[in-house]
Image (cartoon, rainbow, N blue to C red; front, side, top):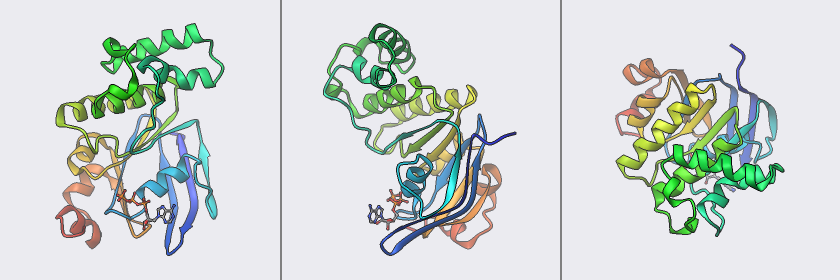
Length: 225
Ligand SMILES: Nc1ncnc2c1ncn2[C@@H]1O[C@H](COP(=O)(O)OP(=O)(O)OP(=O)(O)O)[C@@H](O)[C@H]1O
């Protein structure tokens, strides 16, 4: 299958820190978990894949990608206007944008809150709104940075269901997460980053069952911070 996103020879430097990723691919319908200790470069990798950081070397090729940062910014407007914002930016007429946004808000369980100010949403609702806004522009690749980091289990489960649906619709999903159980539940494949390098990559079941690299093993056993 043709990958939805492919990166080759990617490198980026922030001062002392250097990220180097030889090769990374994600296919339509696939969920790829990016794991690694704090500071290993997960956010940097996602931002490079999203085109928000310019690589010092290498390239990223693929379809339309949308990036959801750890704390997605919301406009001080209604939930509906926030949801429709990406479409409005792309020139979709307001009535049509609102119609499509309302349908998606219903899907993420926010139909009742459409007319409320977005800044009054709870953390979990705000993430679902940000996800709705991202999905509305029909990205081929979804790049998500710790989308459930601050959510309770019920909200996290709702977000996970949305990510599964997005993959079932054929979107490629790249998910940076600290939650190993979540990666186990969702991902078909895992990339494990350590100090800016991919030290292990593979099928998720195999990775969790028998990690090959000693650093992945230490991480899964909680011996790597
Ligand atoms: N804009 C920046 N300027 C300088 N250094 C940066 C910048 N952004 C990130 N870094 C450094 O790059 C390294 C990787 O950071 P990154 O945020 O990609 O890691 P991470 O794996 O996402 O961490 P966490 O799990 O804590 O979110 C860290 O050492 C960080 O301090």
